[in-house]
Length: 594
Image: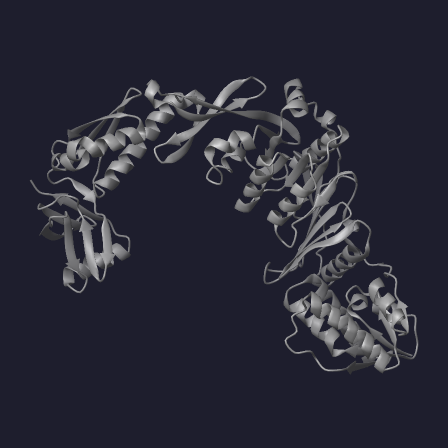
């Protein structure tokens, strides 16, 4: 009997199990099928490696005289295995069976139906029974995750978030057994109910087997074949977390932009699942957007992934389906935060999951990605999960006020207050200071503002004066005394006080400028620029004698130009020596003469 198999029965081991029950068999393999399998393996996809192992078994069966194995047709040129190529491939396989008066073997229902429509003999092979050890054999009732690596002992984590016990099995798992387990996972991901291949990329495959998320990695992405399987062991309701009454009231009435934060393994996903079902049970339409889809929620809650690889496109769809609440699990990329923001501003209730070691860190993930003033509109509640429990809850409030630690009324500005919801105590303030957005603890506001103001003012003045050393002393909450070399005072103040006024407005401080006594011979770090093979040492003091030092050794005495620079050609001996020192990171300083 002659048979022509397609890729579906080769990729998951169905073919060799089918042949083990037959006699006097001739297998005709189209070259196009080999091309597809080679392409999948070249891309590092697990399904490709599984199919290669099956082809090796066919070769051994042919060598042992169990079957006859022939190859048919020509290898397609420029084979990219796009969607239209797969349609072409299925057609090649059907025509091969037709031309050789053979029976088509397939595990694809659409392929079977089309063959029957065209009058081609076809036999549909059901999924094989797997008798070898599979990933499920490593799980017991309280197993959180399984970690398998070729040539290493399996690592099992049992317990609950915050109470995990790590177990290392005695036997070392071989690469061949791990390949077998990986092949079984891929097969089951394609055919089992509520299972699917989420991602299949070069060196990495993510598969959801019912409630178990499995990541398979292999070289060159990882140093060897590795399988990580994660399964939720508990499913809780919001009531199980015993939420404080203030939090429950907020969730029921005014929380529409929620961040659930915590460290990896803290129990964020378990809590989010409970929160999703809490809103669903109250009659809200709830959807999720996940990559991969691994939240364990009830069937009423539809789970979306990245549409054509893009969460932005998923967000566009969610706007059309008119959802009340959307769970975004997990947000890491800048585009994720923008999608969360767009949906929230459109009126969708959003619940985002982020990694954070402190509650405030979750809010800081948004700073710089969206306008500061809209943060309270986007995020009204932050729930921090630690060891599987609600550890703290923050809320946000927008106001225009004088920040804590400052006193002058003319220093008022837009401030985001971050409040401990349970104690109603302000704990952080977020606002613009100069050109920077700062997050200041209220309990240490005065010290923090003084230190920040001193540091930023010093950096700004030093930059404007060409990198010279600057002394800044903050006096009270509204005044700063700046010490600089006397000959630079006019440059800092500017014509009619324009430059110093600009600084006062930028920092909200009254600035007094004083000369630094005894600056003759004092050394400063030399700011250096290199352009067109010329070295520029930017002293910032015009028409003065200066000395240049490299690692405390005097290498040059020169006079600055009208622009306050020392100019050296790199082709000269001195220029070459200073340039080499600059390139190698040596300490280059200058001092200004009397």
